[in-house]
Image (cartoon, rainbow, N blue to C red; front, top):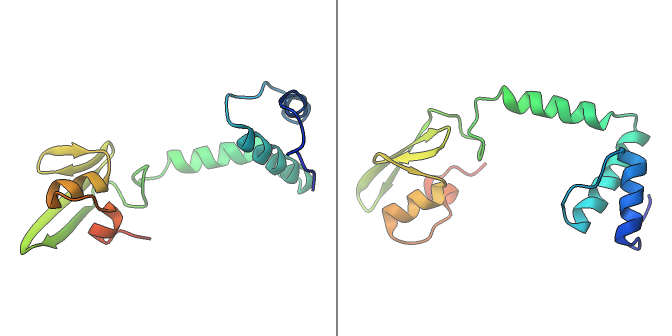
Length: 127
């Protein structure tokens, strides 16, 4: 397996152009190295990297899962806390609780408890 960690930024750029055929995107050095290693492995194993990306994009596009979790859009999470029942609906834009849209379950959990929580833990939505 090649080792790219010793290469300069310019050498990495040349390697990227050689393997991928387009300019390096504005991503960190570590990610460039990981991508180059993955790309070379895909070529060795006769996997088309671009074809794989297209398949992944198609699979993601057709999913009915919330983009930030494995929860299905339209699902409701119900949690009892200090004797009261709380309900959150999963919507495409985030999480709907008491007619307020939240970007994360952690935000909902904080609104309910007043304390910072991991929202997945609070609602029992861990994988």
